Image (cartoon, rainbow, N blue to C red; front, side, top):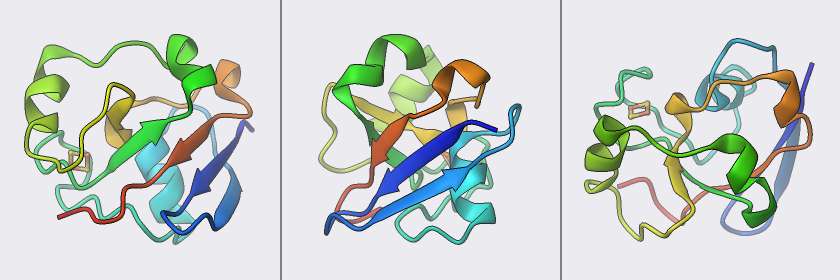
Length: 106
Ligand code: FES
């Protein structure tokens, strides 16, 4: 299972083994990682699963869809590496992925 490291705003790291086929958001929620609220349950409709993808992983993670990009406008402190974690599917190639959570999801 790919290992994903979720890093809280204060620097606390949460390494989690996440099954292929679920989303980066689901991997966090299943392991009770704080900092990802996911109010809509993964429907790309709330922007409370906002994360910053580590720069070294941007290419492998790929680009957000148009729908995700428009939903990201509802998140705060959006950067070029911002993604909605419910829209990133976990695959073997993402073993080692690092994502950082914003200070707040609201
Ligand atoms: S969980 Fe709502 S947009 Fe990702």
